[in-house]
Length: 314
Image (cartoon, rainbow, N blue to C red; front, side):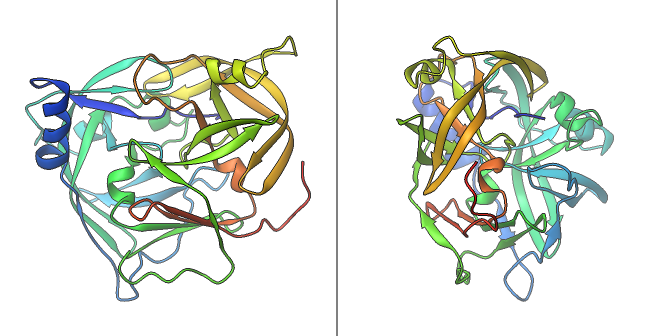
């Protein structure tokens, strides 16, 4: 799986955009209540799909154990419509919503309220979108019918150990940074962490996306600005996205930097531009953090990483 869809734009269809976003933030999509175990964490949990670079974990919902994708690129948590029906859940929001992704397609959906357990962490009153996740929820994809997004990450601190393929969540009020991590300069845009990367010397703002496996993915206009569509070899690719899969182009970037790490000869996915304000021009995925520990504090707008175990540049 090269890349999955980024749920970056979801707006309630009600009386004007400004009013809709206010309603989302203050009424329908209020923050969940997150509590932790005695040590202030969820406890370490192994990636439930250790072959994938993207972090997944087993969670309990409505008495059933399911796989969840931990996705810093998703504005909201999402439950697959098939899982929603299978669990016998019935409570939904009356107002519809629309979700857009990297594929450019829109999907209508509803909202629901979930109670979730992940290790020693409890997530109460989590407002989640009910959408068709397609291959993301199926065996031929990631088999993850639940996405935990920025609403959960904003109420906790996520620690990822990419060497041991394990994760844990921390209480933001008591968390202490490990001594072996260093800060990465980040900002926040539309709820997501962004960092500056360079692509063959061109500076690009990229969303830090734990739900993406590829080191880097670019919108077409950004790829053109970086000089990647200069006649070099282009291969066809495919990416699993919300509800299905889309075609993408694959080119090799001679150099990419993320933080102070230099990568050479990087296969880079190029997706079609999406005509929506604030849509990300680039995604940095988990391949950029191989061999490292990540500490992602969305609420505090901070990202810390350790040095990779192998410092050889690619």
